[in-house]
Amino acid sequence: RALRQGDWKIVAAGSDSPWELYDLKSDPTESKNLAQAYPDRVRAMAAAWQKETNAYIALAKHDSVRPD
Image (cartoon, rainbow, N blue to C red; front, side, top):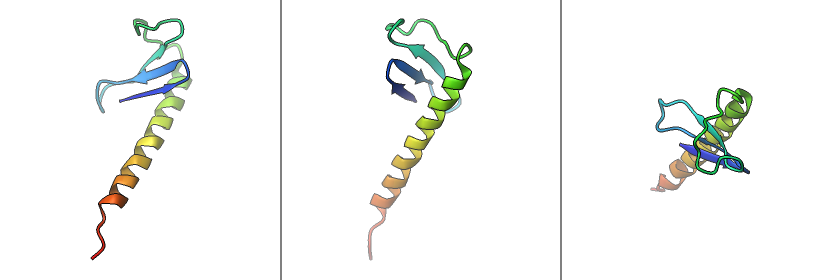
C-alpha cells in the first residue's frame, strides 16, 4: 500500500503492516520513518488511501457486472 501527497508519502508492506511516513523533500531515500512524529498526517493520508481504494473497488465491481 502506498499514497503520495506532494512531498509526503505513506507506505505499508501489506494490509496488516503499520503505515510508514516519509518526507521525500528532505529524505528522498526514505530512510527516516516519521509516522510517530506526525500521527495526524498518517491518519489523514491513510483515510485518503482508503477512500481511493474503496472507489477503485466499487468501479471494479460495477465493471464486472454483466447484463443478462
